[in-house]
Length: 493
Image 1 (cartoon, rainbow, N blue to C red):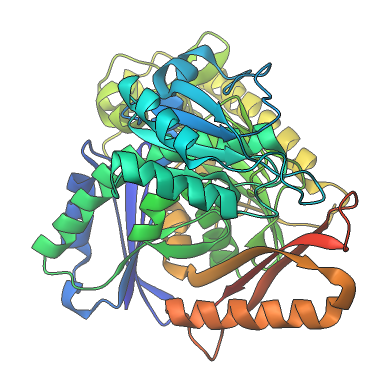
Image 2: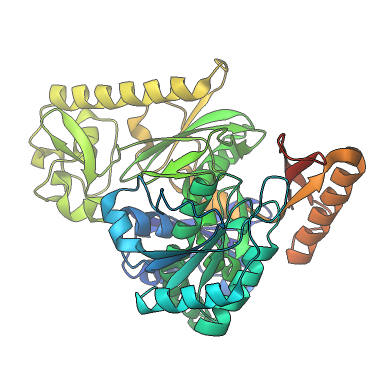
């Protein structure tokens, strides 16, 4: 047996799963600190001494960025001998986020031309000097970003070794070659965000691990990432950006499995927002575009999600719905529970589309007609979002899940309120190899790489009987000699 947990902005859900089937489920309000809500859910679920694993999906990293709270002050070392300093790091970022994170930049010799000739040779003395300057500026974490480093990463690795000679072996460092693709600015953005997120992830989940140990849970703790698989806690702390958008991924996978559909449109209505996505062959469709997160452009693979600022806790102000939400305070702030604020949940109860124990519609200052009109407006917005996500697939069924699923006029499978936690429980162990190959002998090169990915997944804990290649991307570098291409192979099982 294993437990799947989803820590959302409003609720923490937990499910106990045995052989892929849900045995028990529990929902509670998300707490600060996070581990208190998780502890309550685990005690309620029980069977803690029988667990083989605990899978956690969370918006912790997402919320830390959106709120700009508890982030590492991050410095940047650019390996760029041609000195591209006209465009500074964090250009185009929201000002509040840049001020919270960015602590300075130093540009040193290094970097590669597109044909893998060195722009200039790496100079360790420059890197050590840059490290001292950034440390004096108060940096708590570093992003090392080299020109064309995803093709050849050795300069970034040498630079990291030089930094650690100055700042110590435990100093948090992110190498851009391990985070993003070729585009320098977007890769730098992703590296800076990843470096800043190591603080909240380390603090939040090391405490959670201690809570599990105190409860007698000896099973390994895994976190879900945005491709529908899990990674261990150490890797999640090192690469926290991988967990961004894992919440919608879990919901989409859980919804499709609960409904018994491998292809569908999923609408997940939570307390704060509504996520709409497309599931194909049981996995969320990936975005073909570079993503933008919190106003920051990234060349980072993520699920194709349309997010609407509408949720069960959305405040109602005249005809305006959201974007502000009462989140986890719904039962103290919503009028149906005796609170002072009018929310979408109030409208749903008055309109008769939701029935919640303890809710009293007589407390709500809305008429039935007004409530029905508000719900009709929300359904129209959701329907518009669904049509955008369909593309040419007009035959795809629509599944509604989440605490506010009743607001949408769509099929709701049994246990839909905990689809996100169920999706987390179903997440498999995966391994990804991201490298640059010559495609001169394409067939053999790709087969060898897939074999390596399969073996790595098994080494990480995947089942040898079910492990398979779930994603293979070949990205040719047309302007580079020797038919080089970036190849990303992901195995899961």
